[in-house]
Every structure is written in structure tokens, then in C-alpha cells.
Image (cartoon, rainbow, N blue to C red):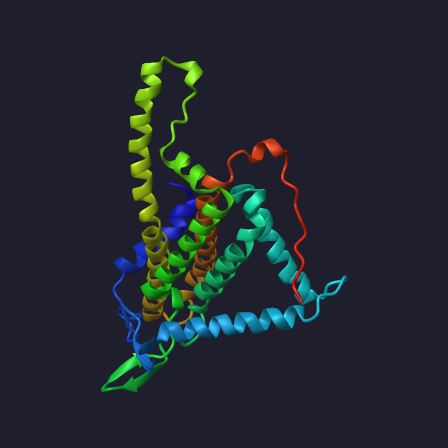
Length: 293
């Protein structure tokens, strides 16, 4: 098992083994409703997600303002993030799809990263309001709510379906799933035609794995963030000032790793079908991405 995988699973495993002995008791198992907009219940995780998204938009706009040829410090930070994500995903998804898929992937990485780190802010899981005879958490990390991570996974998979159909096409998708990849000239005909059955069976297994991709994406992200939050609460219950400090740094790392893993997995899903044959076009050219006005 790789070090990254161990670090990714560590908070969830450790939190499950440490009782929440603190008075805070950790965050609740599910998000709690704060109010309704019509028939839509609004939970504390939804409010946190909205606030994070709004703050992210404001910070980016204030950092960039009007793009300049000689960038300001804020513009340089945003441009480095944008170019870094583009350079990361281009070899994975392929040059043909890198620019169309880039807005989705950079948005997933940035939003998930800030959402993960928002759980480290003071007051998360501890600031509560009294409603209907019970105390309700006012602030809860967006990715510690299964509804939020499922929504991210569903959006990612819908976009994945669009990209593979738009830039590979139904014929290429069907061939990638069920087609016979063997070379007819290198084997007897009876073996070649028998391989059609084998590849069709493998394709059915691949379809099942595709259907489970949203489950794995959402559960992995939710489990690590929810487990990490409860781990921090447990550490605060044991000791208020010194003991939680290394776990804060661990959660910073885990938050980054989980955002990166989610983004890379979606990139790999796209590239598995859309990145065939790109090698013959030579090395990937790294394009500069301009910040839009």
C-alpha cells in the first residue's frame, strides 16, 4: 500500500478507533437542517458550501482584478494554480480534451480543496444554535456531508459522459468497452473470434465498475473528511492546545491529497477513452492559459 493511500485512509481509521470523549462529541453523523427555501431544506453543510464558493469567487476576482501583462502578486498566484492544473491534467486526458475539460477539473480541485480546509476553521462543529428544543451545528464542512460529495461525483460523471461522447464518440466508446483489441494477423482465427466473447465479458465488468465510480468518489471523500473532523474533536477532548497541532497539519495534507485524488481520478476516467492515439502527435505542448476578463 502506497504512502499516499495510507495517509488518505489514516484519519478515517484513527477517528473510528478513538471515542469522542470531549464535550463537543464530534460532528453529527449527518447534516442538520437550518431552514427551508420553499420545499428545499437548507442544511448547515449547504450553507458552508455556499459561503466557501462565494468567498472563493470574491478572492479570485479581487486577486486578479483586471489582468495585466506584468502580473500582480495575486494574479501570479491564480495563474500559477491555473497553469499548474493544466500541466498536470494534459498528459492524462490528452491534448485534445485538456482545454475543454480544464474548467471542470480546476473547479473540482479548487472547490474541494477549500471545502476540505474549511473544516479546520475555528468554530466548525462547535458553534451551535438552539432550534426546536435541540442544539444544531451552525457550521459543518461541506464535504463532511454525503449529499455534497455525491453531488460532486454526479456532476463529475455527467461531464465525463459528455466529454467521451463529444471528443471520442459513441463508436470509440463502444469499441473501448467491448471491442476485440487483438491483432487478427497474429493468431489463429478460432482464437481471434473466441476473444470477442472474452472482451464482451470484460466490457460488462467495466460497465459495472463505471457505475460504481460515483460511489467510490463520494464515499472516499466523505469518509476522509468526516473521519478527520471527528479525529480533531477527539484530540481536542484529550488535550486542548498541544496535542491537536500535528493533527491540524495532517488534515491540511489530507485535504490536499483528497482534492488531488478526486481531480486525478476524474482526469483518468476521461483520459482512458479520450487519450487514445495522442502519443503519435508528438510531445505535449504546454499552452499558456489566460485569465479571463
